[in-house]
Length: 298
Image 1: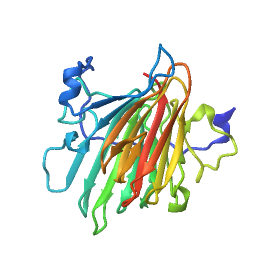
Image 2 (image 1 turned 30 degrees about the horizontal axis):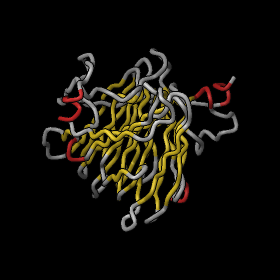
Image 3 (image 1 turned 90 degrees about the horizontal axis):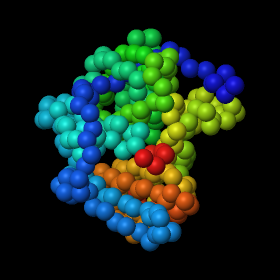
Image 4 (image 1 turned 60 degrees about the vertical axis):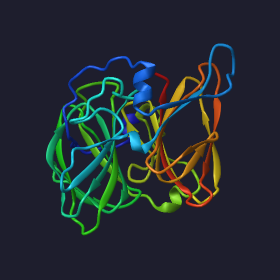
């Protein structure tokens, strides 16, 4: 069995608000008020079409001001609640956090979420109830399957500003055994190519190294990152009945001709009956650093 090929240690969690109210359907007027801009691409057939929705950074909700933290919420979280902006498929949370030196998130609980923290700048120090303690830098990932419940802390013990993206994926089952792990990668792993970070545990090859290989999670999700030179172009094949949430972390990016700037996001919904080619071109001056979360079409 695949799970016998991968060893995990019991695990941990992450926080910042209550997620209590149920989602509601969004009208086109509500989406427009949130800053979403729809772009319809040529249809592959009369019954299906691919679409892109650009979410400008200026329309992301910024957390209530505090001396140590600034968060940009891509979806409803903590004090920000909008029934028209609850999630994207199984992606429930995506926060872009700036944490000032010598501060951070103290010990707090998590439950029934697959949680990933991608370090953009600075150093993130993690400690958990199992006795795990480590510090991670740019391009590293801290991940956990919160399962039936765990606790941990995330701190910036350094003298420089810390920036990271935290993502919560809804698992395919509740009450799982908690797991924790991390990956430390180099820039060459993502330079001018799509680096595969995360995949479904049921699709992971047993040969993957548990310390350097693709991270297994309990959901049909793939995650990629790429850091590109100015003008560099690459193509991603979006399979039928799949969708992508894309974040421009740094620089600028053109996606099938639609331009993105730093901290912009984009929803890409694929075709129901055939694959589609997504062209990703880095800005000619600044280059691009971006993250993609690919999943089943909702």
